[in-house]
Image 1 (tube, rainbow, N blue to C red):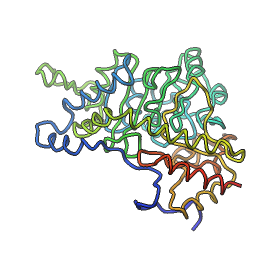
Image 2 (image 1 turned 30 degrees about the horizontal axis):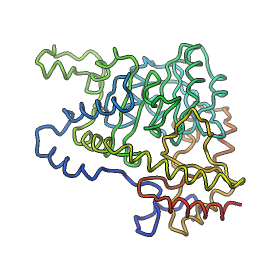
Image 3 (image 1 turned 90 degrees about the horizontal axis):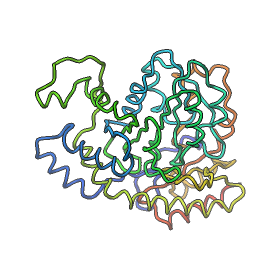
Image 4 (image 1 turned 180 degrees about the vertical axis):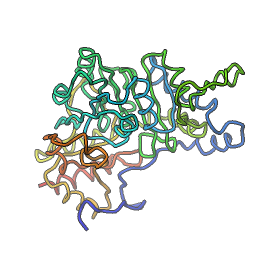
Length: 382
């Protein structure tokens, strides 16, 4: 068995898992109440979750809850007016969920390289890819570290491009004191099982242009005007293609419960993150994926290191019942994207491909755990 083929570690009391779902202890009772009531699918709990999220992260934007982060991305691409044959610049390093919805729509994907220090999309690479057919830029805040938003906004404004943020990693992150979710044309979030908190699965889309809110809500539900239908004023016609992308009241109940506890969630994660950063930054053989930029507040979803002997470190940590992995992988190696990468080179991604490793970071990891893991990493990095 190679180091890359280490199986998923079982939930043992003596081990430290890479991820662990966060669910509020209040949710079991609240969901039980919900199951005894009238609304199970999209109902008042979804409205409440949207309003709660808006107050905390997107005061100046419309907020649409969806069935997944991928649903939110596809909605964003539709609302951005992207059409078959348009070109969209996106990062080569992300979950495939960022880029697969572009395939749904016949979009020509232009993959940009990443930055060596942050693993976020490279500004230099973006500038080389812009053509007259380019319609949008999609950026991903890797691990919770915000991208260079000022540079991205300047590029988008100069070239009249839509800016879309995939913030699946970055709930609670800030750029120049402004919450991620309250900056660009569109921003998407994920509440899949291993994110900061989970709704089982689910997502949020924030929209700068509030005139698009009603359209977003129609597309989220088969193209039907639900508000008009419930009031008895709908004209019984569907004039745009819609999808089944709504969030359920059960999921929204979980979301609202965890949102009330979000300050605890993010503060704990940042405490673990800062512990790793302090303990590992001292080692010159370890490069922490972090840029120490004071205008950015990290969302602390992943802590990633760049080391020359990644496989060896991963194996040795597993011998101590500590689970690590790479989590996301370069998209240009997947067959579904092959036609977009022929003849293309990504030197920074090439350099980092076999060097990056993600350490455990979640609500069950203690400061003591983080110090222990750091001591082992420092010991085994050569």
